[in-house]
Image 1 (cartoon, rainbow, N blue to C red):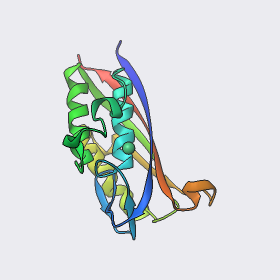
Image 2 (cartoon, rainbow, N blue to C red):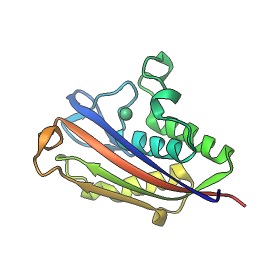
Image 3 (cartoon, rainbow, N blue to C red):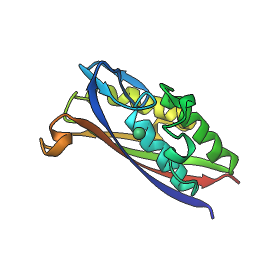
Length: 160
Ligand code: MG
């Protein structure tokens, strides 16, 4: 099979006294995302999309939140392990598309940085990564600023 696709989704609760990391970029905000790792909701969605594309389950199976080894770990480190797994199966990432759903903070000025960092982590050109940010129109927990959610979809191609 030459091409495979994968989808990823994640949501994390916003709490006080945590750094806000999205796509490996620290965003200035009064709250951050709760999690066993650094809570980087976008990188987790990307990990799940990649694992899905190679039919290797989900991030929770690979990095259990009961394992003290992963407490406070940078999600960039998790993504580095996942991309190695993708490459080890003979695939290269073609492109990545993402959506961040956050009522606050406004992410417009950080999208370029997030895009570049994702491209670097996936060993692809920046033009092959899209980062979209939107609000939840004030609806539900996301709209009430209680959480941030992300979707990611990825296409991978078998290397010749
Ligand atoms: Mg997560």
